Image 1 (cartoon, rainbow, N blue to C red):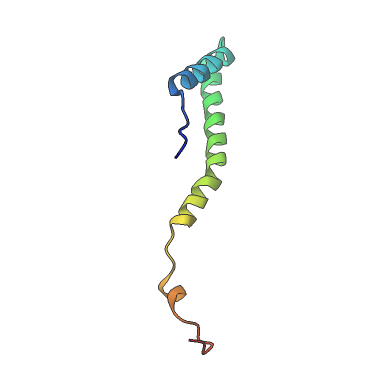
Image 2: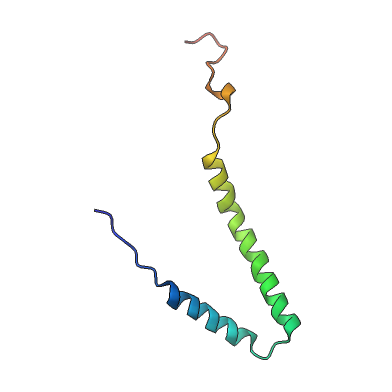
Length: 74
């Protein structure tokens, strides 16, 4: 039987929100924007290998890849 994992999304989002609020308390609007720009850039870098692996897994072989080799083996 498959074991289920419980994800407490609301609690997770609240914790992230509270941590960010604490980090950004007293910061200027420009500093807040820069914080989220850097966070977004870091997230994109981390997601890139995952996205690339997913794309490669979904690629279909080219029709030439399905043809028998020209080596004479059948």
